[in-house]
Image 1 (cartoon, rainbow, N blue to C red):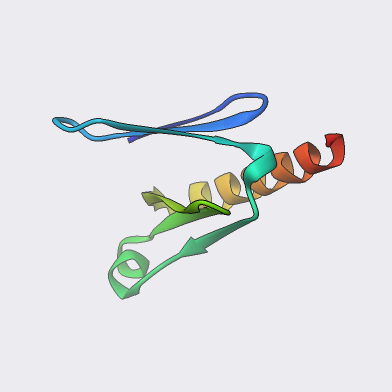
Image 2: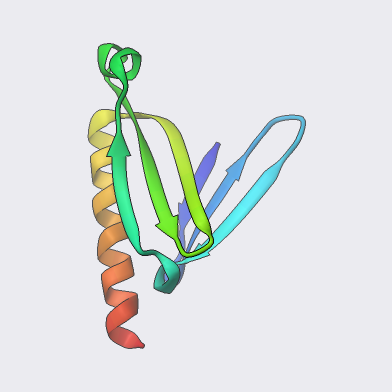
Length: 85
């Protein structure tokens, strides 16, 4: 899985055999969250969830600190995009 943040959008690519690429404009982001179940907590990992009107998109298996940082960056970019509209 690869996650790239451009100036105006979040680009999520995943898959080895079946590839899926999702581009989410920051202006469409409604909510960001981190999630940890008991196994992920034990491993020190977390998932970042990005919610839009079309549904939710998950970025799984990130280091806990990296997940928190990514969540904050996406939320800040979404806030800035909303101010520009």
